[in-house]
Image 1 (spheres, rainbow, N blue to C red):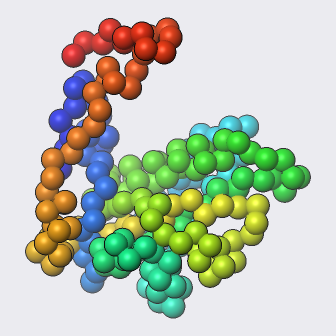
Image 2 (cartoon, one colour):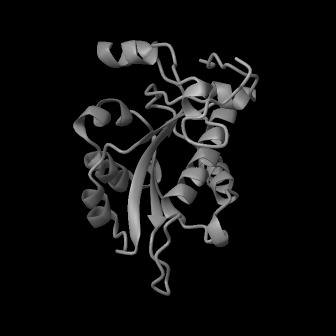
Length: 198
């Protein structure tokens, strides 16, 4: 479902959306997961710190996948429980030398976007979620204190929308919407209208 953009942007960006529709019976092959992680690996980061880590949950370890699903908020579990792949994206907020990295979440976000754009380019659906129990994830998967669980990303091939509950199916078909450029950009100073071509 491509976005209606104000300006001409790349088709990959227009086509990126956060779907809740997954085929639970079609696993994401390990070589595809490797490509997603490779895309994340090449994201830019402050001081080249690369403060992102991913814990991969798929059918190679069903027990870990079920533990990851158990950490999801109930509303997300309804649809994300159908995704054959979950990724826990973690930010290294304190370096091994004890230095705080104030850019860790920003940089992890860049890696996540690389990963999600790669997923979309390969015909996968994906959706990042903040709606999970972060402490459950930390305890369940041994995340060290200098790292912060940030988002869980559901990934999978498109499923049959008819299999989704009515409310979620309705949300899947809603038109995509974003603030207009003039609402997010200023020229030279705060509240100075950006004179874009609209």
